[in-house]
Amino acid sequence: MQLLDTIIFDWTVAGFLPLVSGFPANYLTYTDPIPTDGADQIGLFVTTTPSGGAGGTDGNAYIRVAWAGAIPGSGQPTMFVEDSVESPSTTTSGTWASQRFSIVPKEYGPFSTTVTTRGAIWVPAAAHFFKIGCYVDAAVTLNARVRIIVERARVGSPTGMSRTS
Image 1 (cartoon, rainbow, N blue to C red):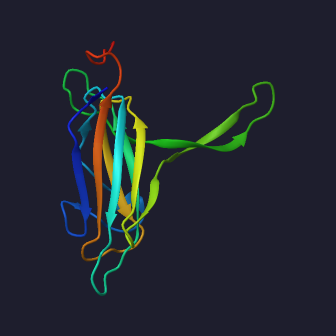
Image 2: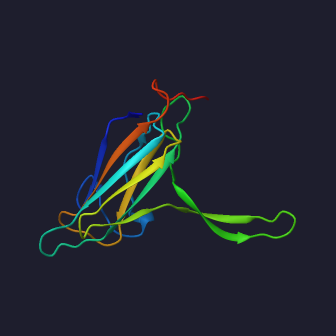
Image 3: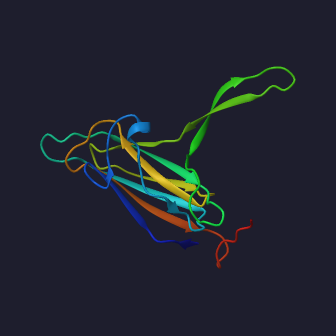
C-alpha cells in the first residue's frame, strides 16, 4: 500500500471554509477539487472543537463527499455529483415488475461541536476528483471548528495502480 500526501481542511466560524448553519443546499461549503491521484481508498478523519468560552453556541456538523471524472485531455474535473445512497421507493407489477429506488445524497454525521467528537470515514475512490462539504445544523460561534484530515491510499501492485482507458 502507498499513502499519498496528507491534506488537512478546517471549517471555522470566520475561516476560508466557513462553518455555517442551515439547509445543506444553501450552506454546504465545499473544498476545492482534490485529485485522487490514483488512490483507490480515501480516509477522512473528522474531529470537532467546541466553541468554548462563555456564551458560545454549538451544533452538529454533517459531511458530504462529491465526485467528478476528468475532462479528457485537460486533467480538469467534470461536473461534481454528491455520493448517494439508494432508498427503496415503489414497486411495479406485471411481467416486468421491478423495485424502484430513490437516490438521496449521503451525509455523514452528526459530529457534535458541543464536545470534541472524532470519527473516521472510509470511502472507495473510483473517480479522478473529489471534494468534501461540511455544514452545521445550528449557528456556531467563537472557536467552533471541524477539521478533516484526508488520507489517500493506493492498494495494489508495489509499482502502483494501472489504469486502462
